Image (cartoon, rainbow, N blue to C red; front, top):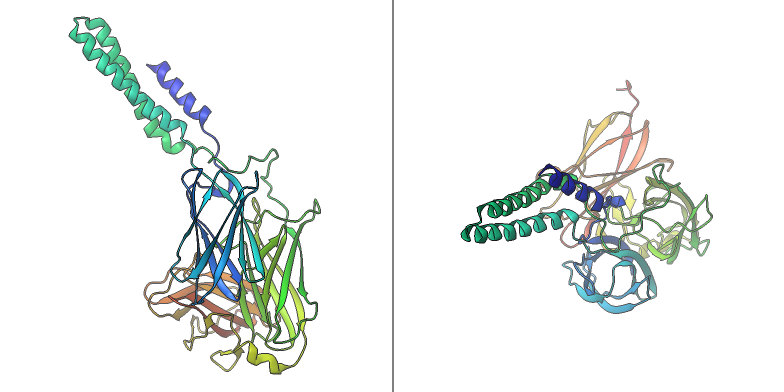
Length: 439
């Protein structure tokens, strides 16, 4: 009996594969936020359970976008097999069903007008674990031996019957032991997962080298232009094409004017390996700052900043639209968002540098999750040298609550964002932070 149990344990450990990096889970949905055709949407690729089999894709809109239809093209990277379809961007997603023939790396091409994004993803299917085989196999063998023991006992062969019953007991014991220890055994790597790296990534991958530019190089106020982000691995010179979705986006991009009167929170499109692009327009000439957040696989989060200049006259501001911050500061907002007349509450009322400040804002009922969170707080120092982004803490009732520690005294520009049933709300405000002991 001891030999049987030892053999079972050895088989479980030998057949189990290590867990994949970044918690790759077969059957899980992939959600990727995109700013496309002037709309903020989230593409949802539903997990699939078998191949060949169905692949369902939906596009969630965070504001009414009548008539926004997006072309879908799913291509297998390994054999080039391609299927196409269309999806309607709606507040309540309507899923389009396509068909995939194999597991492994795929690309989803998302098209709207002349804008195109290519989202890499993997079709993953769960493998049957060694533990399950031992559990069901042990119970099946135990059942056969038990029946055999009963039949043998009925033919007046008690010695053989006892041996068969003992074997059945051993099978049940093996199954029970596996059930007890199953939670401690790593799940097998799903079919279609990325191969295990041949070299250690314990130290993490290096930060990307980043170049941001506008196309055209000197955009005019009120006219559309493209903000381009190129990512390069400094150690190899190759494009960085291993971004992992964090908070439901390959990258988060925040663009503000130097005076803070213009604010956009965007999710650029991957248009080529190592290249992210987004279209926008600025309402007035001047200096603008761009802060981008992203994360490479097997690496930490990275924040980069750049600035650019918009030319022209302030008359173009009518094309962008403006919302007004409490206190008189105007703050243009991205398509599909609105300002709010609510005033955030701070505790303490005058924040102290280096100490936590609680910030609350009342919201309407029915706030829904956006970018995997109920709310977002984005903060920039007056001069643009500091940028912070934190998430809602889970406040009860109709409110969003944040805790933030301002790094040093001074004036800060801040924006709270949350999503309702049909729009993204942006609430701008300013904060004056004192030094410790100044009160």
